[in-house]
Image (tube, rainbow, N blue to C red):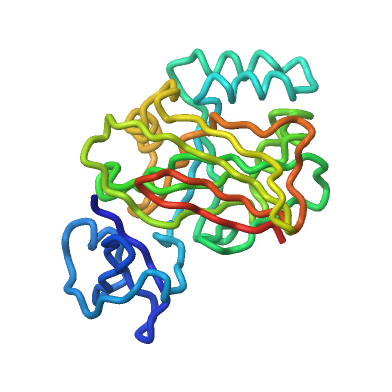
Length: 270
């Protein structure tokens, strides 16, 4: 299993190759170069001794929407307007929904970093997603975990409010690692757990990327069509796991998203 993290070191940010509970720190901070096998090991240290950074400084983060049947149903339920058919139509269409979530990591944090709730939102949820890292030539090169934090009440009021529902400070997290899959046809269980500040469990659930209507590679191919997506960008492939309607993120809540091959992405609401 080939996995990489980024971490603070005495020499600045560095990429490191994961080997169980040990990391082999490379002599550079270029995740795409590490995936290509470039760099030499400078030191090997315990993973627990490092402060992890986002696994890639993504120039752009994109999202695909309504890619799971459960996501389609949730959007239909929350929609307050006659635009309900929009969600059903995009799920059944050949062309997926794609939108820009962030650029230059302005609204995105990494493992252990804070996520946020919009001040004018009343219903905000985490959206656990498989993320695809895009390399040279628009090709997928690695996987990570993403949290597409979303204001459901704002999007539900009108689909044209999606930029406001999805794009705000602290609205995204990625990490903790990059995983280079042996097969792009593999599927992955995704687990979500939310706890209160006192540790009480508020929600736990599981889904699988086997339920994706469109494969990650297909979604990437749509994204890069006539679109110069910079290498190192990330595409989040949609969510198939939805907390109950009565739940909303609040300050102090801790969100854990787990994919076995990648790790656990943990973030606290500030």
